[in-house]
Length: 207
Image 1: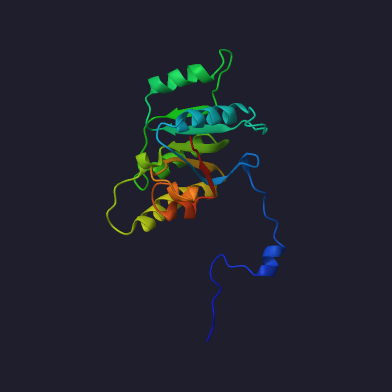
Image 2: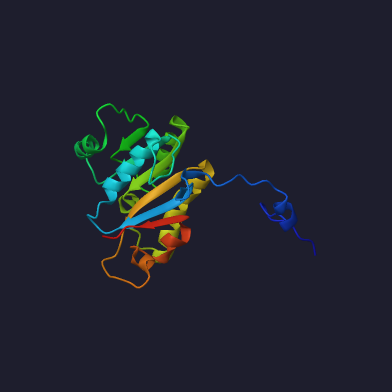
């Protein structure tokens, strides 16, 4: 009986001898490259905080005492209009600032319906992009009655994680919490445990 080594397999010894690039941090010690979830209650200020983070990162300004390297940021603000975004920017941006590295988008395709190609097109247009925010996750998901909730969550989130890993960027998904309380805060994330299972980083916001 002969055996064939599967693709991408490696011996433990070879792996120990292989230089691995260090973790790429978007916010040092807090937000690495990969797939991240930012979940919070409805109307708790998630979008305000997210827009502020995008501005800080795009301008290379510190975030909670952490120094940031300025990089291009793409913010899919899918529950807002350009007028509402402008109003928020007026309150967050000083008159002398020109946050040209922050790209705003209020429309998108869905996961598996063109969103992945849309993201790749942005990456090719802005090679220094480091963060893509999708606000909110539910806006890019289609209703799928086939299969279990876990399988559907894992498939959808996994498709975005694959892009984040391939291009070495962070994709941050803004999401909602359930209204029911739980002894484990992470159990309050809307959806199945498939979302947490895929994510590299999870932030929770509480009032």
